[in-house]
Structures are given as C-alpha cells and as structure tokens.
Length: 264
Image: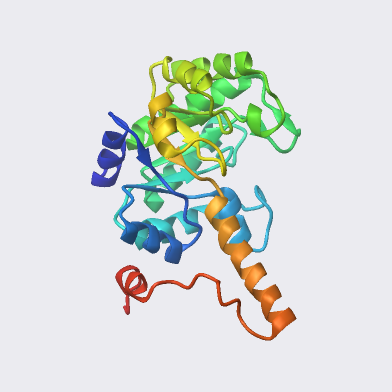
C-alpha cells in the first residue's frame, strides 16, 4: 500500500469528486495542474493515441502506459483495465500485481466479453470480480466492479442491480454501471452501501446534480480524448479548406502550459 492508494481510498469516504481521464502524460499533467484530486486512464483514449479502436490494446502496452501516467503526476491513478486481460483467476491476479507495480492506486474489472460479444453470465462475472478483489486486497488497491449492460444495449436495470449486488459481495469497493444517470438508478445503486462511480455524459446532469443523486465519484471516460482529437480534425479541415487555422480554435494558455509541463 502506498500514500497514493491511501489518498485514493480516502477520497471515496464522503462527498463527491471528479476524476477525469487523461490519455497521455501531457493531458495528465494539465489535469493535475488544474487541481483535480485523482486521475483515471481511459481504454478508448489510450487506444486512440496508438491509432486503434477501444479494446485493441494488449496488457503489456497498458501496463507501460500506466507507468507513464502514474509517473507524470503525484495524483492517485485509477486504471481502466477492461477485463484485466485474462480469463483465469491466476491471470487476473497477475494483471492486478502488474498494475500495482506500475503505480496504480485502483483499477476496474468489467463484465463485457468482446470475444463473445456479450455480457458474461453473472456467476462467471462474479468469480472474476472475486479473483480481482483477492489480488487487490494483497496490494491495497481500490477495486471498481463495472456492469457494462447499459453500454451494450442491455437496458435491464434489475439485472444491473443483481450484478452490482453480487460484485459487491465478492469484494468490490466501488460500483460502476456506465450510462445510468437518473436519480432513481443512482440512488438504488448507492443504497447498496458502496461508493458509486457515474459517467458524466454530454448534455446530461451536471456534477452537482449527480452528486445530489448519490454519486461519490464522477469520470468522463474517453470524452476528453474524443474532444481533443475532434479539435485536431476540425482545425485541420479548416486548414485544408482555408489555408489557415480557425481563428476561434482554442489554444493552450501559456501560463497553464508552463505550470503543467516541465523542461526536464
């Protein structure tokens, strides 16, 4: 256990905090300079930096990425570790130890299986969470269990609740079902007794409203990476069409750049 893991766990004790998702060392430094208390990787955002789609990155690549992001700032780092890159309990444990060694303060495990194109059966998913929880306890990491139903068109909230309840009993510390946002849904998950992570959605409820509904932790997934790459594309299209940059394009403030980036 490290000071970073202690600070990360303490953040979940009360209130609500925003944990944005950088996609490289530069974005991590910028977010730290802005004053956020913790950061999280994004599988989709990291994949984009390699010119790939989400869930097309290998475990060794993710572990190396985690080491880079963890070293970029002193903030606690949560890792989007997909399925933990393994189908066995031993394999899951190995991934957890590699993430801890790389500097993670927490990590997540999800129940979506891209190999089958479906959500794992609840008993299978629960045993996977149990394996992750056992390894997490050995290293002091905060484990988030994710139910991916609502990201993949399974709008069965009763099943989501049954899964989260089972994952909590298996040792998860934080619960997360991306794309739930109503007061009733967040409140129901919070009533299970564990901190709830909620994904902030464009045009959806604000951080203040999500916190009032029971969210303890709020993240943005791959949104910052999508916005950054969208800005590159839009500015480049303007350059092709007009022979200049868009005068309204946002540029990084010089003072913030100096605060975030080092000359070492």
